[in-house]
Image 1 (cartoon, rainbow, N blue to C red):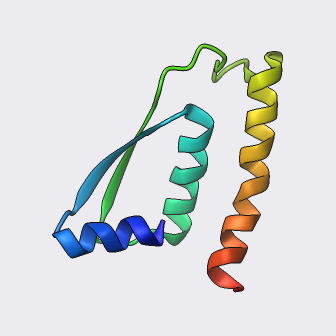
Image 2 (image 1 turned 30 degrees about the vertical axis):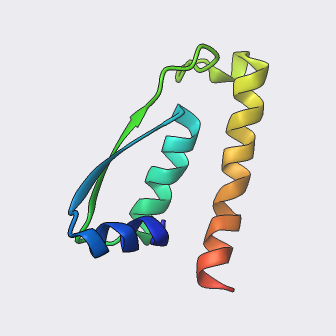
Length: 84
């Protein structure tokens, strides 16, 4: 996140569209809310992946695993920024 913000500031960008798979975009959006630079606006769009159903992701094994991994990455990302 901080690398993206530094990249954008160096080039004078004030907003960006982030397109990634839906579970990752949720984590990225959450971390941006917590750690983001208020002078930069990020918009998020989930890419279309066949295995993701926002309402029923828990029914698909791939989606369940991916969602769990993304949830576990949140504390790790916060640790990297605030503790290290």
